[in-house]
Image (cartoon, rainbow, N blue to C red; front, side):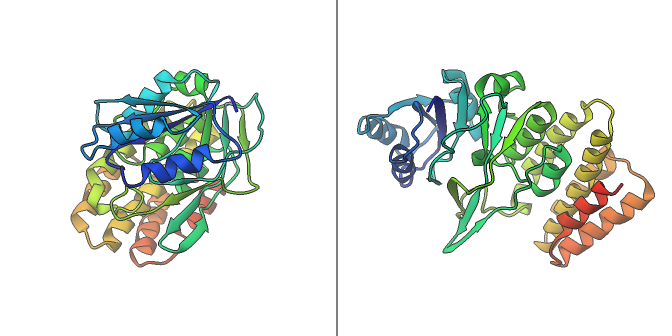
Length: 304
């Protein structure tokens, strides 16, 4: 298949072989795999070089000195020579790619499975092109987006200022700019393994500074949209999402982190009083562990 898979690597010597084997043993293989070491100190870079010689698939091992997965992914993007590019993580399991898709699409989206311990579930996935839907339910993540290489370069690649949720921010930006998106819904093609030391498995409060930075970048993306109903919906969705984040931090018992996000809301976002009341309700629902706040928020956005 005329696609490159890019894998950022940071201190994953214990998992990279399992991940790499899952790719090269798949029935649908990429033309090339690019592993980008991002300053590993556990011998991951040298081990990846050894592994690259064990397979017939073209495997390039590169280095990126700028810290952060986004920088490593952009390094892979700069080295890519295929029309399509896909990003995978060095501690997850690859189970294949769709056998074909619309070559005219700029982005192809596929469902994601999440494994936490022995529990396996398919993440919420809405096959709709509206950015506001993704803002609320984060349906797009690193391994659910396949890009045309030239399109991803055109929209600026990965935002290296985002040290967390960079895939959420990229999903917003991609949906804003893409003219044709294909949604594949038949099955998931990979498993994200949630661990205590992964970003996926981390608490909100422990990364509040990085979260606020990503919120800042995402809001700037949205503000650049032309005036439209979708821009209004996306700004409202973003506002409600921020309140849900505040509620999550309160649920974790960290009022100080919650106040930092609330300050961001107060300084950067202004809404009508009725929406302010809904935002407070979303915050309270989440803090009290009442499920489904984002679904209520999505209903509010779609009906206003």
